[in-house]
Length: 180
Image 1 (cartoon, rainbow, N blue to C red):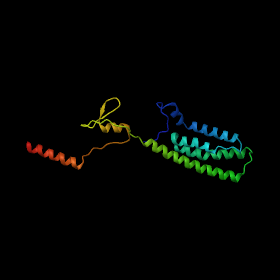
Image 2: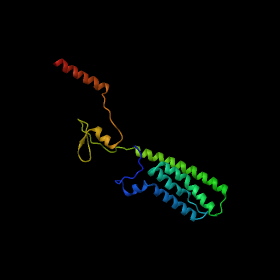
Image 3: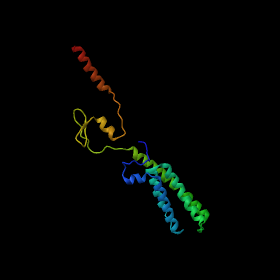
Image 4: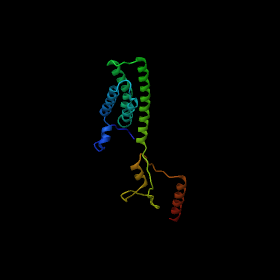
């Protein structure tokens, strides 16, 4: 299934919001502001995971990677430029660790989102006709198994004939020819 980050008018409001890059920029900016306003003693680096994961999963994977790099860099820049007491060496090492961890988290969220979009599972009992093998749907309509599964999954069908059925059909055809 192809990933389409553009919101559709048919989507619920929360999914439309989660597919807009501006939402993640605002969320990241708000988290940086909260962390910076608390000073150097109280930090919330785990909160940086939230916009990175959501952007990688719902919006676009490149946005998740960009946020994973930009958020620690911006936080370091604000602390350094605004005259907060910063041990530059330790801050650079911590920033590099944050970037590495956030990029890895973005990668995992991207892969998990891709897999979640690809997997569509049929669950429960499927009522199947014992003779014609059609499936009854929720509206009590009987559909060929191929169309039912194709509508509910990414599976597509190509038809062939197995060797056993081919032999049976050839025998039937020979009997019909000999009768005529």
